[in-house]
Image (cartoon, rainbow, N blue to C red):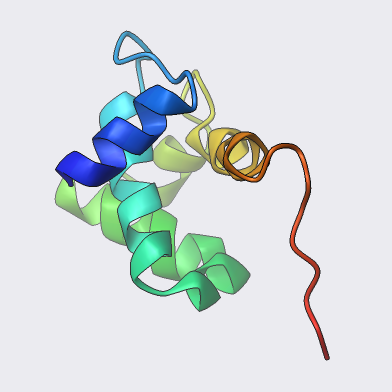
Length: 87
């Protein structure tokens, strides 16, 4: 998790962000298996919610929106370019 923490800080996500610890865990789960991004609620939000004894809606709609931050994180890491999925 330390490497992910450093990566988020390099991408200019502050630890002051209220949902930082949720975002950190969401990114860890996505990094373990990027296919989880195809099922955010079931494979990312719900496991994070379970760990913190919340509902997935709490994670999805947290005041600072970790879900939106996942998308923003991807943009920042890739330099603003989204990877294209090859079929």
